[in-house]
Image (cartoon, rainbow, N blue to C red; front, side, top):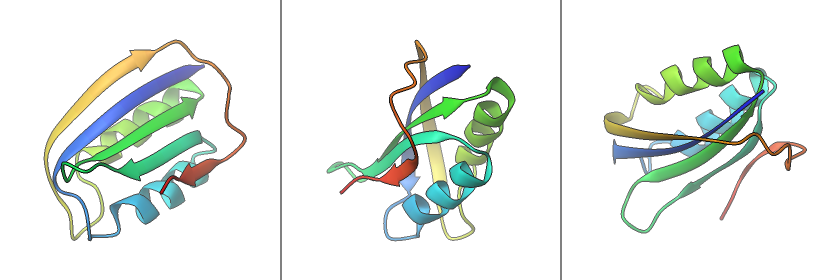
Length: 90
């Protein structure tokens, strides 16, 4: 099991990044959350099986079609199993 804490920078707000992240993560049976940051970035935590988490990370480097990802910062953290779903935080 794996947990990644990710910050995505670029044109990632106002382009459905959170909604598509949620849809993609749920499709991969991941748990965690995604939210917009005041600095214009998007932050997310993904938890689940190793391969689906890695696939989600790869997706973050491109995002939805309307996004323009410039940078992805990734921090691996100890798996905690704290989440039941993958949610958008407001």
